[in-house]
Image 1 (cartoon, helix red, strand yellow):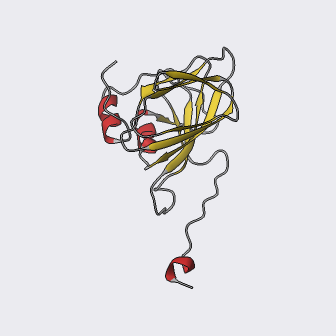
Image 2: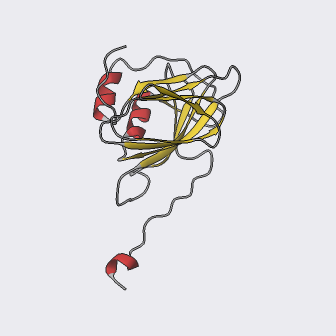
Length: 168
């Protein structure tokens, strides 16, 4: 055996209420749960993984990631994904890959159901953005949304995982 095959990586098991969980500001509202990130485990190639939940009529504004590839897998609810201006149904079981510098946004089109998905991004950085713009979410805590985005959100985006955006 070589040294590489003898080395073992970390193992992480999280229960549903664990992870780093954050309420998200307008316009998304809803919440994020960061499930795997370099601060949680040692990984050879940095990435992060989590879930996002958008309430009815919530949306993630159009954005792009400069050096990041992202995978989204929709778990429940119904909505729309707009990638490079093309609209796709975001229904349970739908998986979308968005490569670096590709503009994309997500919209919960339901009047009464959350849109929930799993996200994976490589390299990591998205988890830092969510933590900086969000508010910690504890089990049983009431939903504080809506609340505004931080005034320095464009700076936070620039240094985490986003292509520089124009002010809204």
